[in-house]
Length: 128
Image (cartoon, rainbow, N blue to C red; front, side):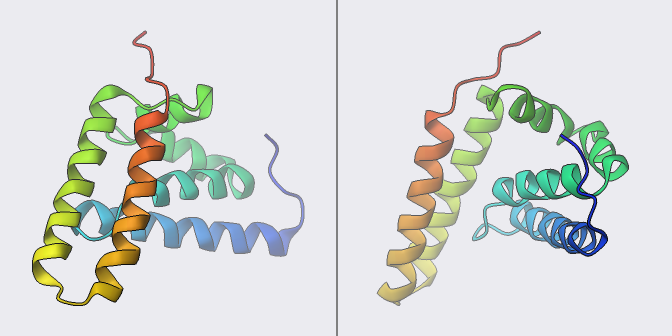
C-alpha cells in the first residue's frame, strides 16, 4: 500500500496513529481497555502516513510478529489470541466487580464480547 499524498491527511493519520499507540499501550497496562485494536489501528495509520514509522512498529519484538501476521493474511497467533482473550476476561471481571452501574457494565460487556468473538473467529497464524 502506498503512502497517502495529501499532506494534511497524512498528518492527521500520523497523529491518530500516535494516539492509537498511546491508547494501545495504556490498554496493555490497564485491564479495562483492550490494547490490540488500537495497536492494529496505529499500524494501519502509519502504513498510510509514514512508511518509516510503520516499519519501526513491525520491527518491535513484542508487536512486530503479530502485526506481520495480521497484514500478511489477517491471522492471529494462538498465543496472542489466548493472551487477548485472557485480558478481556480479566477486564470484564474487574468491571463487574468494581462497577455498580448497569449502564457501564452492559455496553462494555457487549463491546468486549464482540471483540472476543472477532478475535476467536480469526484464523490462526501458521508457524514458519
